[in-house]
Image (cartoon, rainbow, N blue to C red):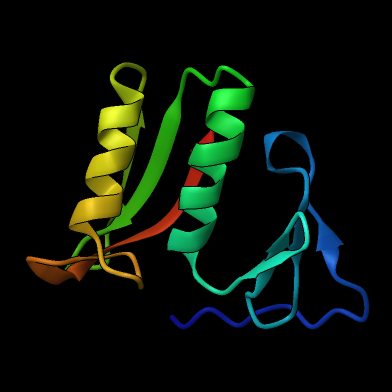
Amino acid sequence: MKYQPLKQEEPAKAEGLNAGFVIYDECVFERNGTRMNSLKEQFVSAIADDFIAHNATHLIVAVQLPNGAVEIIHNTSQIPAKANYYIEQYDEEFRLKVNPAVRIINFMIV
């Protein structure tokens, strides 16, 4: 199943820890005036801004496996190290460098 973005006349605005994101039709996001085209760019921005500013204690990542199953990873300790792992080991499309069939499809910082 392919993701089909919703068509909207006005961009949606995120709330909570993700406040400041503006969601456009074609999965292009804007945060504090900076457009971000990839999920990885959003992740890096959220870690740099929200994680530190809001003392987040949970990093939750949805990873799609080669067979199509989605694995939810919930980290509650060593979050900076885990975030750094995702940034270094996944490419700009958030695909695992050593196995591009594995990719991060979403994340949440709480």
